[in-house]
Image (cartoon, rainbow, N blue to C red; front, top):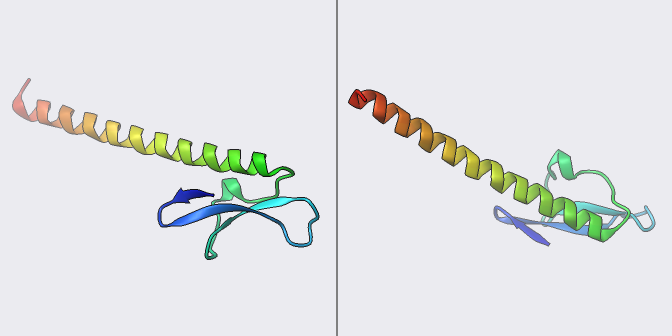
Length: 81
């Protein structure tokens, strides 16, 4: 299981689907579209969660960096440099 916000993503056998796995949110709710579907191996489903969360963290880090750069540029413009 992997943490996301306050709930966790978990990999479970899909009911009535034999040996296929699905990703679910602990406590119910909508799973992100990129993670929906079925997986033939638990390892593959866990890797999908890991990739999704690392990509999400990367985008958030870059967004903060981009916003910081814009703020610095705006301050520079206002100072007349």
